Image 1 (tube, rainbow, N blue to C red):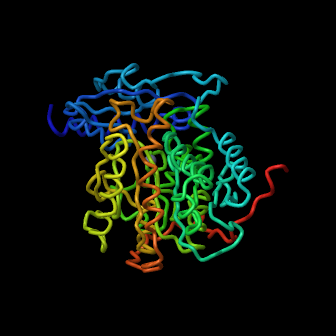
Image 2: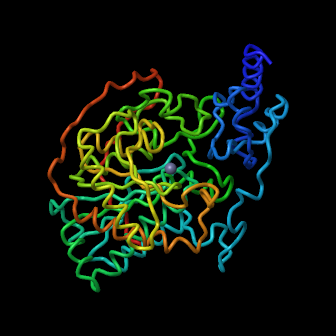
Length: 440
Ligand SMILES: [Zn+2]
C-alpha cells in the first residue's frame, strides 16, 4: 500500500476516533489492554491518536483502549490482540478480609481517617493541614511532622508527595507509611528523633483524591484528575500542570483534552496543582520527592529539555546515593537518570517546577515494578511493605541531608505560553488552613 493510502487510512481512523463519544468511552466503561505490532502501529500513524500507551516490547506496542477506540481500530482494519490475562491485576476483585475493593491500599476516606488518627495519637509531633480542595470537593491533606509542630522553627522542610496519578496506588502508600514510621519510632530510634527534631517533614499522600476514588470505584486505569473538559472528555494531568516550562512543546505534554497527558488550559489551572504549590511556596523546602509508578527509576530535572540542569552533577550524585541505599535493603535496582533522557520528555511536572524556582534537589521516584510484564500499575498488596522498606533509608537520607543552602535560587524562568483568554488561572490565595480536631 502506498504511503498516501496509509496516510488516508490514518486520517480516517483519526476521524473515527474523534467521532467516538469520548465521555462515554472514557468514563462509564472500563478500558482494556490491546497489543499491536509495532510495524503496523508505525505504518498506520497510530501514534497520533493519543492512545494510552503502556509499553513497547518484543516488537509490539501495548495500550489501554476504550471500547470506542477498540471498535474504531477494528473498523479501520488494525490487527490487535486483546490481552486480558497478561495485564490483569495480580489479585482481581475484593482481596482484603474487610472486603474493601482496594484491599490493603488506601482509598481517600481511609487515608483521611488514618492521617487524623496519626495526628490524634501523636499530638506533640504531627499536625494535619488542608492544603486545598479538589474539583469534587475532597481535601488535599498535608501532614506536618516535626517537634513543636505548631511553631515555625525555621527548620528545612522536606516534602514527600504521592498520587498525582490516580492509578499509581503504591505512590499513596510509600509517603504515608514514611509519615507513620517517623511518628511511631520517634521515641524508639535516636536517628528518627534527630531527624524529626531538626526538620519539618511533610507527607502529602494523595494530591489527586478525585482521580484515586475514580480509579478504585470506576476505572482502574484512570490517571488524571476529574476536570470536565469542554470537549466532553475528562481530566487534566496534574503532573503536567505546574507553571515552570508549562506547555513548552507538545512532546512533553498534550494540548488535547482527551489525552492522558493533557496539561490543562493554563499553568496551575487545577486546584490540586495549586494546593501543592502554595505549600511549597510558603516555606523553605530543602528537598522533595514525588512518588509515581512504575519502572524502578529515580529521575531528576530537567524533564522539559534534554540539556543538563545547572547542578546536574549534584543531582546525579544524590540520585545515585538514593539508589544505592535502596539496593542496600533487598537488592532492588532503581535506575538513575535525568528525566528527559531516562524516561521521556515531560513539561509542567512538579520536580521541574520545584527545581526551576528554587534549585533544591527534586526527585521523581518511579516505584516498582520494573515494567508492565511484572505487574505495571498493579502491585500486589503483599509487596507494599517491602517497597516501603526499601525506600525508607533513601527517604531518611534525603530528609537528613536537606539543607537551607541554595534556597530561593532562581535558576531560570522560561517564557510561559500565553493563556487562552477564558482559562482559569486564579492563584490560590490562602495560607495553609489548620483543620479541626479529629473528633469533630
Ligand atoms: Zn505517575
